[in-house]
Image 1 (tube, one colour):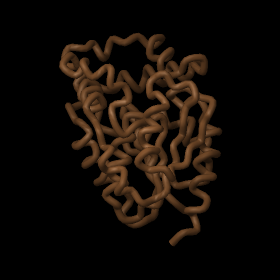
Image 2 (cartoon, rainbow, N blue to C red):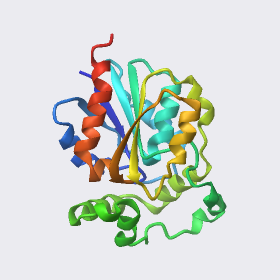
Image 3 (cartoon, rainbow, N blue to C red):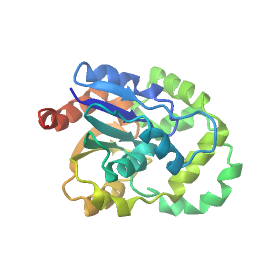
Image 4 (cartoon, rainbow, N blue to C red):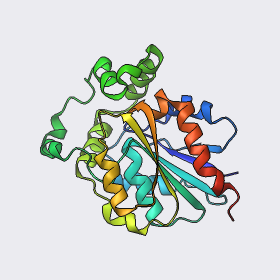
Length: 232
């Protein structure tokens, strides 16, 4: 059985994967990588942190959600032993909103911990929002320090792993949220220019795809991974 290694979104806690893991059932062995909740760690440090936790004695597929897409791509490009595939969810290889690049110099003073839950919910969940999802979102964000959130926002604004895409030689699936207000479809189009063979599953969901449509995501990933299960 393949192991599905889950790399979390901006909160980094991994707690928001719970509905998705439940929907997966017994399809996979699941490993969640949770990032440190404090410290100014950018992509380079978090990639190193994640690499140390990859399975050493079994085959696996990496799933990079939102913020973690560049980490999943960088790891895949290095060809770690046992890697059989990559799943990208609502994510990017470079800053998905280049028009906001000017914010980079202001990240240090942004009140990242003061964003009200209704605003985050509208942006991340939209019409798919529920009281339970809002509560889970607020709980996850409350665990992460302002320093850590600023470092991750700064990392997103400056990241570009496009040059590494050509080195990826395992199958890839992109889960496209059809109502994503955070990562536009051009992020997928950019990846496809470098990797035309990437498979795409469009799902009726907001940016928080795995949380709002866990069953649909689990089904799409199951169909993607099934041919890989029997590979040596």
